[in-house]
Length: 391
Image (cartoon, rainbow, N blue to C red):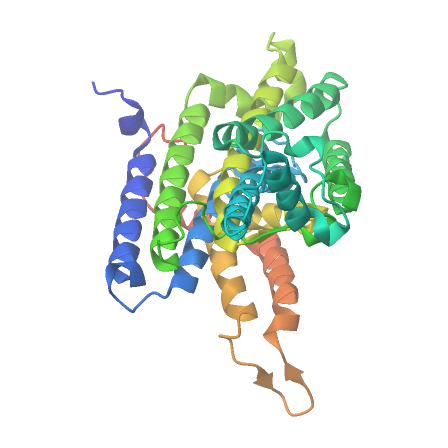
């Protein structure tokens, strides 16, 4: 009997097939391929949506499968964005500075170049010296490691302190929210070295690729986002499908009983919390070069609450549900707030969707919670499924 991972979890194969078809279709219809059906701006929206789907899948594993309602996972997403954004901004500024100073009669010294780069980056907050946090911003390799290791280390330390104290339920959610709030307030300060509320900008300009059009760069990032989502989905499907997944779900359903059976519950929770934070960092590193800017507002607690809403709407406890929820809300948000949705004139009042979109999202969340607790993904329960499928 064929007992492979795919045979036991055919939904993984179907998801990857749908993702591949979607990626191929978007590629053919994009401006970079010579077509005019999908604009570069909308292609960026689709690429960013795939990144949001990835972080939603991570959130679904930690909440839907392990039962930890984390209100801080979008902070890990933002940290990944800041990590890659520091390299992008440094290298792009260095190119501009070296080009402008090349016309000088005397060639500039390395110290002069560094000072000029610092003035360009930190002049907006009244500084010119590089803070210690920027020590490795010149190295793409080290910053890519930071994309994964910094969120992972933060999640590891926070999770170890929280789980060893056996903080659970709403108290754990409040702690994760407090961590996120503290982090965002720290990033808002000008003396942190991250330009305060100005954030990092110009991230869409990739160093060394100034001759490549934004249409082509957007397509490359779209491909990278699709690959990351596919790999992340397979990773989490593998984690949740085997014995590890059974223990994680048991922790969600009855933590005390799992501990009584001899399992070290804290280790399982810490593993899930840490690895999902690392994947969230990767998603953020792909998202913000497509967005072009990142600021501390991206790390505020409300962003993580939105993430939980996406998972709930899609259907927590099923990976494809998280993808559906994140994709649906992201695309609808772009449509309602981007000016595509027409305002409704009621005579006595004009409904402007840019103002009412969050109200609609909140109402949708309440309706799903009350009447469709399994979310959009619950619709697939109406289809016949192979016995033993968990992903």
